[in-house]
Image 1 (cartoon, rainbow, N blue to C red):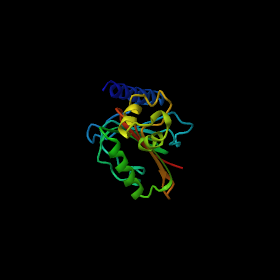
Image 2 (image 1 turned 60 degrees about the horizontal axis):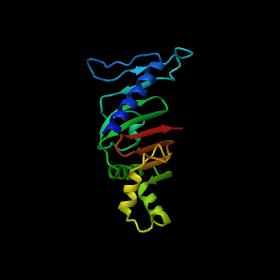
Image 3 (image 1 turned 180 degrees about the vertical axis):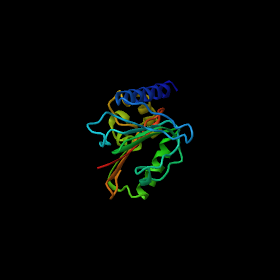
Image 4 (image 1 turned 90 degrees about the vertical axis):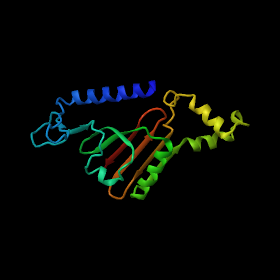
Length: 187
């Protein structure tokens, strides 16, 4: 629980720092409830690079990135996007939920250069190591959970990365006891 609170605080602090560094302020339109873009200083008035759309509503936005992927059935957290990528956090998601969503991503065409990391694979790899001889898979998994994966420099407990034929890439990361992050970007 403390880890989740720290993560939420960190995400909010990073989003706030990013928003402040762009030199603009986001607003909610009182009539429509939609978020406005944050303008970064640009070289010319016609330069649209640097626009950042931040949304705390918890709703699935309709943009060029989200049109590439199936809408997840998870609780949604903060999202932000610019002209090159879209990022959102999923809340209260299990590793099994993330595995199933990665299969939906494959079904949506994200089948190029697939890279999957799953701690179940790590448990299988450790099963044959002498230090883990005689331990059940559950005991190995429990042993791994006692470590802070980030402190050990290890990847999240589950990741899925892939591209589609239209030049979009997805990255899905699941850490235990923290929110799940999802990123869609284009070349």
